[in-house]
Image (cartoon, rainbow, N blue to C red):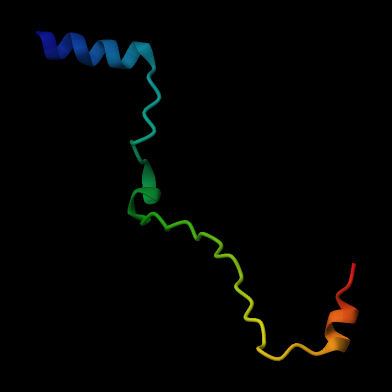
Length: 57
C-alpha cells in the first residue's frame, strides 16, 4: 500500500529528476570537459638587445 501511495505521490508532485535519461540519450557517454592549460613559453638563454628594445612598453 505504501508503494502505491509513493507511486501516486511521484506522479502528482511532478518532481524533475535530472538523473533520469529518456530515449537514445541514455546511451551517450558523458564527455569529460577539457581544461585549458596555460601556455608556457620558454625564454631563450641569450636575449638580444634588439629583442628587448622591441618589447619595451
